[in-house]
Structures are given as structure tokens and as C-alpha cells.
Length: 256
Length: 127
Image 1 (cartoon, rainbow over the protein chains, first blue to last red):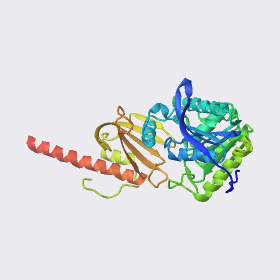
Image 2 (image 1 turned 120 degrees about the horizontal axis):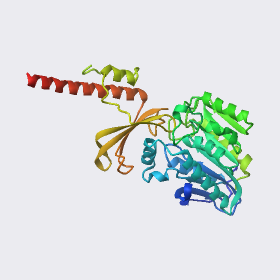
Image 3 (image 1 turned 180 degrees about the horizontal axis):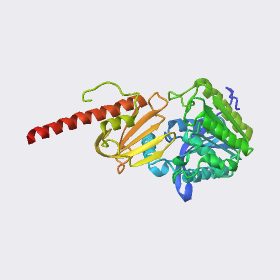
Image 4 (image 1 turned 120 degrees about the vertical axis):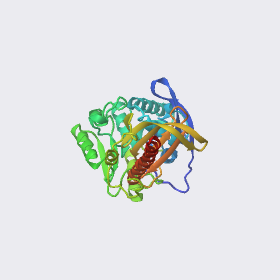
């Protein structure tokens, strides 16, 4: 993990850009990267159900600060523009974004990062909440990611009644296709997913001999990284972030 | 039940609806899933007041999910919407599950009192 020294040069650029999305459309994204020619590993961030919000912008910059080319595509782009929470409400009322659209958008962002001259050729994917679920889905349904981090993604395990045309297959049913190492961070007090669902997912990963690390934090529920919400758990969040950066460094190479 | 202020918070919403024997409040049009829980949409008629003033409402989206603001692990999130207007045409509330049950009871009690007094007035005028 990058150890900052007070005599180090540091600089980054962070801005909104447009990138390719599913089916040839163009979507917007927040892109943060260290200054310099690299080579840098990359991370695609899949934002959570509350929307393409400030926390995700900050987290995108956090990855850039740690030496990654980091991009957070707006997977709610097709729902129009407004305050992030208003767009999130619109998406919520519409029953969410189809899994196929998310997979398509994220695969395009993966290609975008890999095409950059300062890329080291390795790219990971990170997401929390619904974005955590989508991380697993994308890591199973696309090839090219080198590491995946699912933070408390709910509904990886889904009942038949939960399946809809937008969510036609439970992500756990794609486990055999997982194409890269997976890190999962979960809270013991979370109900979405429950510890039992996480254990079920873990059994499936073992069954197919996948490379994974799951960590279940005591005294933590859903969203324990979110410093602006009541579920924030300082000790667990600090440890969790350390695990994220250690995992990415192991599989994506040394950050810039 | 008219005028009752006691809490029914430990009872579920279905019980409250059955108790009133009416279907006026919840007529579900769609049941969908989001990050963690259930989203139920129902058509509504009325008006909501947002930052730009009053606007017509045509949908209420009721979800059980992680709140944006309320310091609670889960909340009942109600978005009163005009789905044909822009995303800013929204009046949002997040309620703890217990207080959401209290709200359901209050709505039912209010309707019961209002509709009861109207019925009595009609009976009186027809005599």
C-alpha cells in the first residue's frame, strides 16, 4: 500500500468526462487519475443505490490518491439528470437498472481504462451496496477484470420471487463464471445481505474453486464505510479500506 | 377508533388495514425490488409541495430500504412523485419502521373520522 511521505510530489486531475456505455450510447463518468505517465493500475467504481453521489466522487478521488486510474460511470445516466438523490428516487420507483445495462456500461469503462496510455494493463472493479452486487455480476459476466471488491452487496442470493425481467438471474448462479479474484466485506448485523446469505455465497465460491477472501465484521451493519451515515463504523472501515488496497495491490500491481 | 392516539406500532400494517375492512389506502400497482428491499408503487391523486411550489402528484413510491438521512439501519422511504415531470418533482420522507406504522394508523383513523362524519351528515339531511 502506498506510504505517503511529506517530501513526495502528489497531484491528480479529477473531472467529469463522457465515456462509451452499453449498446453504443455515451454516458458521463467521474474520472480521477494521478498526474504522470504511470504506468498505473485502474479501478472501475460502481456506485450504490443512493446514486452517483458525493461519496462516490470522493471515493473515486481516494483511489486516484492511492495511485489508481479511477473511473465511476453514472449507471443512472439513462434516467436523466438532477440532484443525485432525486435521480436515485426515480430509479428506485422504476425498480432499478437492468442488470444487462450495468454489465454493458461497466465493461465499456473497463475497456476505456485499459485503452489509456498510462494504464499498466490491470483493472479492478469496486462497488458498495447494490454496486457490490453488480461487482460480482460484472466479474462473472465479463472477462478482463483482474480483481473485484464487493462491499456488502445484497441480493447476490435471490429467491425465485425476486427475479424480474430486469434481474432475470440471481448473481450467485453465475459463480462458476467468476473470472477474477474476489474480496468481499460484510457486516455481521446486515440484513441485506444476511450473514447466512454471505455464507451461502461462500459455499458456492468454494464449490467452484474460486479465489476469494470474505471478511465478516462484528458490530457492523450495512454501509459501514459511509462516514456520513449512522451505519459508519470507524474501526471496521479503517481495516476494510486496508484490505481493499492490499487486495488490489496484490492483483493489480503496485499503484503509482 | 375515532380520536384514538394510542400507538399500534407493534402491530403490522396488514392488521391495521384488515381492522378497518377497507381497501381505500393501498392499491398496489407494482411491487419491485431495489438495493435491499421492497418498493411498492401506487397511484395517487393530490398535490405535493416541493422547492418550486405546489405540483400535481400521480404516484407514491414506498420502499423499505437503507435511508439517505435518517439515523436508522432501515426506513420506510416514501417518494410522492409526478412521474411525468422532472426528477425534482418529488416530496420525500424517510420514516423509521415504527413511525411508519404509526402514520398508517393515523391516516386510517383520520379517514375513518372524516368519512364517518360525512356519512352521518348525509343520513341527517335525508331524514
